[in-house]
Length: 96
Image (cartoon, rainbow, N blue to C red; front, side):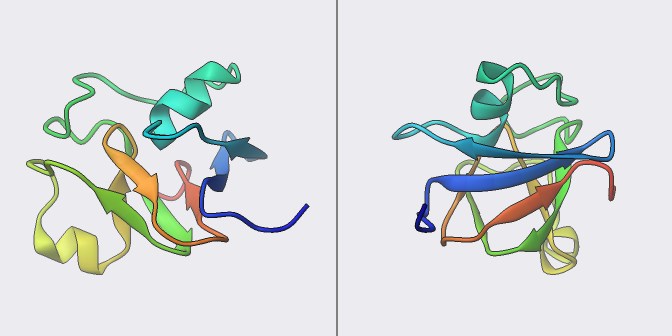
């Protein structure tokens, strides 16, 4: 399988999962669709409960109200509003 932008690897509870996201689907939505139970609350980019570390690649966030510039520079993203921007993106909910 060739790497695609919409293919993301997520780590949660020390398990690694690959998710092929649909068009416009967020990382959070994709995780829930395949039966993963990621942390979340508001699902609108405000509460930061869904924050995860971007291990590789890049995540684009729409309407980010929760994370400060310093957290983004440290490699954190909100998965409820985040979508992978490049192929090979990997996020880790355990590394928060």
